[in-house]
Length: 235
Ligand code: PXP
Image (cartoon, rainbow, N blue to C red; front, top):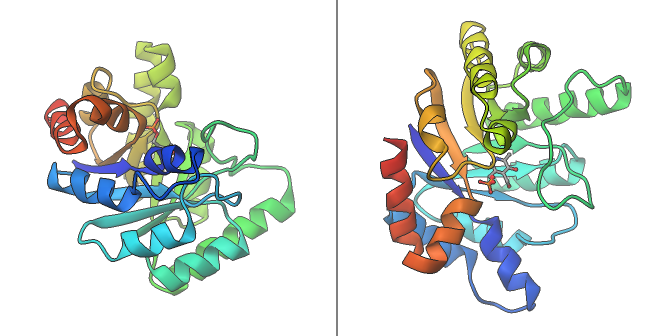
């Protein structure tokens, strides 16, 4: 199981004072030293945390880079230029505090669907693997396969909030369905040191993407140690 650490929260702190510190790239080096397999960052359309220059510098690091982005032409252009190891397409709303739900791949809005399809193709044509961030829902998983995504990222937020066995079961069922139809699987959102274990044991998952819990713990023990502790919790 790989661990991708989302370092957006470091950039949020920097932007709060419009400063040059803390530097998300230094944070990325620390989490990689602590055993992370790579970093995840979300270049939002409003650039509220990660900036374009951050992504360029992150790309030059040795670990894997998973670029989260909305399905827009601007973002596709940036991704094609930078060639991250993976692009995860997420829904984006200006007023949300963090990504709230998964993509609605069954959207009734036709223009939204064709936009998504075009962006996926453009990226894949340039050799970039594409993941779709979705809720653990049968129809969404099926549609991700129709769209010929390489990966899905299962949204674990509901499981993390509710802590109900039923929510864990939904993640397991969605992962099994995805495996059977040939989709590769990541998972993330809201995972922490306490709730990560059962998710890590779901068969077929390749990578967990975790941000807030590691960065928050890192404030107390350092990012390298916080990442090491998360790797242990995943084991
Ligand atoms: N995966 C996706 C698609 C996300 O948008 C986020 C949050 O930026 C995460 C994982 C990480 O979530 P958290 O910060 O709650 O660990």
